[in-house]
Image (tube, rainbow, N blue to C red; front, side, top):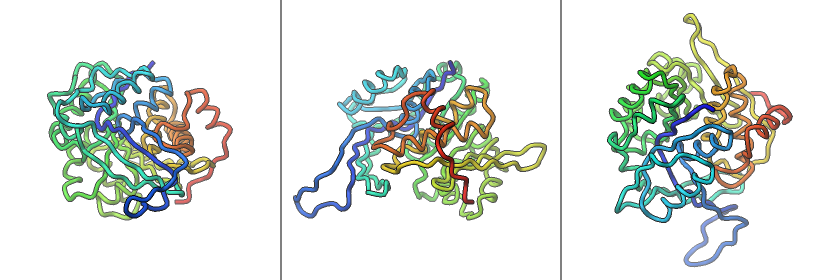
Length: 320
């Protein structure tokens, strides 16, 4: 069983659906469903990885409050190793309120909380050295860990032959590309959304974005493109190669965590030695299941069920 360290953002999500509008004053709106889930570009991916059968180590910062207890207890039920979640006194666990719209869109109200206190000194490098994969998720919302501390960890991972996958939270900040570029030479699979890549580079052409990140050291780009599918690209003997991956016909309830689940599925495929086409397709199958329910932990049951879903569900070819 492959071992994955999932490092970065750990959040407790509070979600409700369907939210058409926020009622004025102190009036009441009735919803069909409200849930609290473990989420974030590291923690949400951890839960999906564990469901898919991998050995998962969670690494990040949470508070000593009830929300932190919830994250630890929930991850424990999935047999995720939480001993490397550092608990920060006097600051709340990071949390997000998500009023889910009828079409699945998810505006977010977020408290940075303990994620903002993660530092290089909190990282267990020995745990990373013993892993097969390091999934880094959350750059831009880890102010004490972003930049040089992250670079040092990724460099350490590569020196120990750990495969590095990388996702981020692409908020609109002028220095985001400055944070990302020094990390690219240590990243095997750079996995943002295409819109996030375009926001960082200012380039509107997909191929131009692929070349931008490959030219700066990333070994592969894996762009998640929503209803347009996904793109996996790399260079072979100097020639740019791109794989366009379809999506699956599915019912849209809530898009929260779809990108995290794609990453989990892709890493799982890598751990089974699959080719990149199949890794991307498995990631797409994970996202298609998650989008059918409320919260980032919806849809996926286990590895076998997801393989069956991938093999039997109608595919929709990319439109790009």
